[in-house]
Image 1 (cartoon, rainbow over the protein chains, first blue to last red):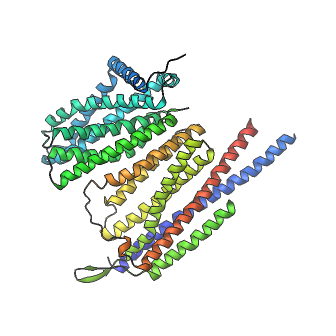
Image 2 (cartoon, each protein chain N blue to C red):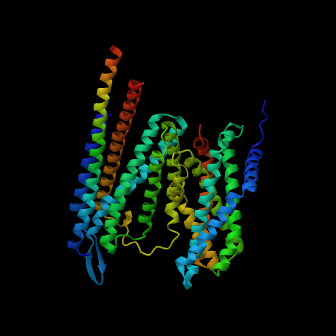
Length: 52
Length: 231
Length: 230
């Protein structure tokens, strides 16, 4: 296969790698920060409850 | 005080229990046999008058056997669980790995019985013959059956302990058993065609793979069964 | 642990970008003889990331099984989390192996799928580990979930080498077009491979730590919710 024809394939392969890896980091990171927020809220609620 | 019986006696007791239950109901062997016959009739529809059927003879035989084994493996634990027998077995002073070996031997036996009846019928229906050594053919089938019943018993215990129950078994059993399928097809297919030379060497390497698989998974099952069957 | 994770991500990014630069700018173009003419194979560049990703996914599955076995031996929750995180990562990397492998198949052989031994092995691996996730979702009670999936992670890892050898029993249609074994590689190509491989491994460890933290946080949230509710 000629160089010109091969370029889109190589680009597609590397794009796929980066997109998937970034999407995964993003998804896991988002989940973690969401959980941390929830954890903070729960901890506050818990303190309030124990004071009451 | 309960006298502890030896391991071999424990295994024998479980096998005996399964045989008695099977003789009473006959549901496992009969339904497996009818199922495999129906699958073979379906092959006829798929292939029609094709002359080159013998090329696929080994592969089709094992696809039929694998799905038939799946049918039986599901039964073997579903009724234990449904009728509360599994709790009974777990409460009895039996070592957990011995439960595995007992159930595995039972499954091996039922699958083998169905295969012994089916292979000649298959040969007659599709005008096939075994060109190579019959002893080799039988040992390839036995080695494959050990693999199927070992992994099958282990994984059907896993699946029975989930919400999906028998729905899960094919999803986890088939990918794990694929090496056995490949090796069984290559070895039995090769022996049926009576190959020689390089292809015969391939038959032997398939059988070596089966031996290694059987030994390794027997060890894995021995080590893991305690964890799989439940607390 | 958070700082360490961030640092690892940064190191992985630097290494992978270096690997990329080495692969495209430094490593020589592969040229083969075809009908008496020199033909350059640009699509070979895919392999600089394809092979490291494949290695990393296998490592992830093996480490998942090791943590699974540790869970069964010690019954500590953290091993279940690590085992699950590792298997999940192996699965993500495995998906990338199939993606890059398939694109290479398309560019060199002109078809979207070939039953090439290595690609076939990966397809079976992906199906094998799909079963892991289905199994996990099919058990609601947490301790049985951990126990059964740990056992399955070990069973699956034992299956992998057999799958690898079994697929080679069936005669392959395609010859291996080129050999990426070390002997034939030039130093600059080897350097690009090694840097990418090291980068991917660091990335895996970073991901493992990140995923582990989410699982820990999730457990804590559940615990607090139960305590508040009850």
